[in-house]
Structures are given as structure tokens and as C-alpha cells.
Amino acid sequence: MRFWTLPYDRYLTQWLTAVDPSRPSIMVAREFGGQRDQWQFGRAELLAMSWLEDLDLAWQPDPRSNPLDPNPYGTATGPGWIAAKAAAFSSILGEIEQLQMLMQDDRDRYMAEIIEQADGSAGYITAFIDTSESRRPWTMELINCGYAIGNVAYFYYKQQFRRVRPSTLCPGLAPPFGPPAHPSFTSGHSFIGHFIALLLLEIPALRQRYGMFAAPYDGRLGKVVDPYPAVTISLANPAVVTLSALTAHGLSPDDPINFEPLPGGQPLPAPLVVGTTYYVLAPGLTANSFEIGAVRGGVPINTGPAGPAVAALLPLANPLMGRGELTSPLLWLAGRIAKNRERLGVHYASDSAGSRHIAAGIWRALLHDSTPSRIDCPTLRSVLAHATAEWPTKWP
Image (tube, rainbow, N blue to C red):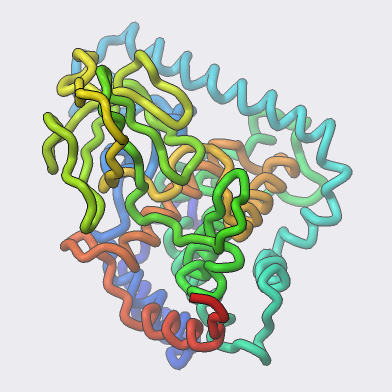
């Protein structure tokens, strides 16, 4: 119950030495936990960094818009705050209804699997990639590192958001065991599943087998998860930005966005400029494409004359943006583990998605960020190098 009441323990790096300092996973937890300024952020920062998306927090009205807040922003009013709370409660009711349907239709059929995954998600993952402690000890240690980092990270965010379990609001959702006594958001199962999947997909041989595949499947080997999602920008009036790999972006109208050219690729089409902020427009917004303007609600940008689309990167977008299906078998497994927690009724769909997004943000900061915002965990990189050597690749 400490996670409801106590803040993050800044002496974590010291008391972890009493566990087993010789284990790489313990050292990784100490390295990660000691850099709290690099991964502990508030609601506004998480949204600005795309570690969370607006829909992930639709259940929680922004507390800064409360007129009673000592530092309100914008033009918050009493009626506006009431409307924001009503919209949030409507979102919660929708999620509760979804959980009720899962309880009625799915819970019994999936219960055996749910029970196995409750405290045994690591076994599901290792069975899925067909490995064991005796065959590939460093791969198992990499998974342990994922748990070590994940347990520190997601419990911090549980303490920050303190979201009540669904059965608190709807007692009929109470599961046959539990629910856990700690808060619902973020979901530990969803965070751990997605984070460990991303770590394992850093190994080339596993990426070939379980990485991102084309949909529909075209026979090619699995690809890496893009730390900075790739898009194409049409040469048209208006220009349309379309995701290259993911199936949904999760962006909303007025969300800020910027672009970078692919390394060694074509420059951005005029008038787009690297480092300039643009905004998603409501007209033309679909699950995997959108139009952009120079200002919020502005005129769509014209990149004509017509020609082949230009590939680019979204440097500020989340690597696992949106809620669409992920075409990696390992990430699919992570999503299934998260979905089973919804079937059990112990967390909401937004918990699954928000945890997926925070996990992806931390993964990128650990292994794919060369800026001052990176999280430096040399032990994790060493374990990953050893684990990679355990999986020889058979193809280029």
C-alpha cells in the first residue's frame, strides 16, 4: 500500500545494494533509478514529450485547468472545469462498459491463461522465443533487466496518477482473485510486456523472427521498431502525412508535430523546414494519416507540384504511437498479456495503451537517444551485447 501514499525513494540506489549487487539486473535498476530527472515527469511533460497521448489520459481532467489550482493556465472557469470533469467521467463510463462486455464474453474462456500470466509473464515470453536459463543465460538476464527497470518506472507512475481499480467504481467487475492493492495506471503487465519485447527486438536474430512485419505479410524478415516513426509526405495540395509502419498514430487535432529527413534520404519537401513545429489539422484526419498546418486550425500546407511521396521521420512521436495493432509477434504477445488484464477486469484499456507508450519512451531514451535527455545505463548495454551473441543470425 506504500505506493498510494509515499513518494519515490531517492535512496533507491543505496538500499538496492542489499538485494544482490552482483546481479546485472540490480546494477541496471540502480543506474536507472539514480537518473530520475531523465524519466520522472509530470502529466504535462509526458504529453509534450509524446510519452503519453491525450486519449491515454481522457479519464483525468487536467488538474491545472481547475480554477482552484494555485497555478491555473489558459482561461479556466468554474463551468469549464465542471465540463472537463463531465467529459472525463464519460470516458470512464465508456471504459467500464467495455470491461463489462469483456467480463461477460471473454473472462471465463481466457481464465486459465490469465491465471498463468498473473505472476508468470516472463515464462510466457521465454516460451514464445523458445529459450531458457540454461541455453541462453544472458537473454534471461536481459529479461530480468527489463523487469528491474520496469518495476521501478511503472510503480513511480502508479504513485503519481493513483487511478482506482475498475472494481472500485463497478463492484460487479471484481475478479475471482485480487484485484491488486496498488493503483491501476500505469499497468505493470502492459509496461513490462511491451518494454521487454522492445529490449528483445534489439537482438538481430530475434528481430528477424519476431520484429515488425509488413501487413499483409510479404515474405520479408522482421524489421526493427523505429525509435522515430517513419512517414511519407505526399507532394500535393494539401499534403498528406501517412504512417509507414504503424497502423494508427493516436494524434488529435492541434497536436504539435515536426519532421526530419531520413538519413541519406531526400530533403523535406518545400515549404517544410527541419525543426519547425507544425500542427495536426482536423480535416482529413484518419487513423494513419493527417494533414498539417503552420498554426493550430490553420490552412493545410501545400507541398505540390505532384510527385512521388517523400519519406521522413517524426522525431517527437512515440515509437508505439496510437492504439493500432502492432505487426510484431513479440509486441502482439505484449498486447495480449495487457488485454487479458482487461478481461480480468483489473485495469482499463487506457491503462494498457498508456503503459505501452511510456514503455516505448523509456526504451528510446535508454538505447536510441544521443541527446542530453538520454538515460545512460551502461550495464544494460553490456547485457544486451552478451545476449545478442547468444543468437547467431542465419540471414543478412
